[in-house]
Image (cartoon, rainbow, N blue to C red; front, side):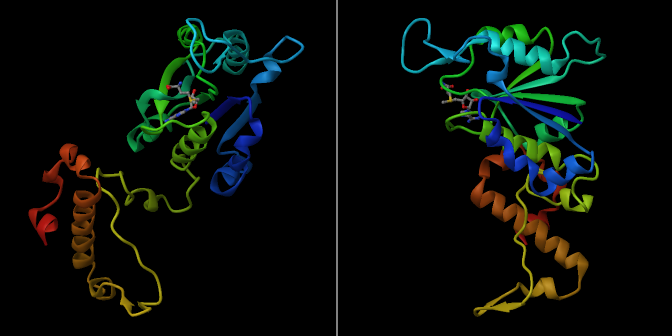
Length: 245
Ligand code: SAM
């Protein structure tokens, strides 16, 4: 997969050189490029923002530097079978979820446009639809200073789903949100720590009982912490005993 990130703070994306995503880049599993939006300005001050039409607080990102940057990373002159996906982080976007991470992990190229200030001139989003499948996307119902933190989160969530990035693909299966429920609690050695014991069933060696305990814990934890998830969870997937045991 190829990923391009455009930002006025390219150094903000440095953590994408670390850990599993950094290794995936080194191993050639992920071809990731970060671009400085100011490199696509033409004026002496390399300005990327201006005052909003209609008045109001804050500044708005100017359209032309964005059009130049996005045309460059999209390879607008090249004939392409499919349009790359342009993700525009925004608190006014569609909510980013694990299901969307899976969907986006199937794409050939993702481009991320990191907004700052009050956001990007809306005409860029309209224009970009000629070259991209445009997806405004929100990390959650709160407001960040810029799109960079959202991009770090989204690239990590998508990147770890690419084949070969996570050493044991099994670990992607039993995770929170993979089946609509939160993950069960996990423990490691020692079995007794500061007078707290690991649940006895996990030491029993009975794999059937362990699996049932874990499913029950998943259900209970989801009911306590995220009851909203149970509204869309298909309870038929879970035997009654696992919900109530
Ligand atoms: N005025 C905008 C609004 O109310 O919708 C908020 C602008 S915010 C200060 C600046 C930038 O941060 C946005 O353009 C976007 O790139 C990013 N951002 C802020 N909150 C976000 C969120 N919840 N999810 C994704 N990106 C976010």
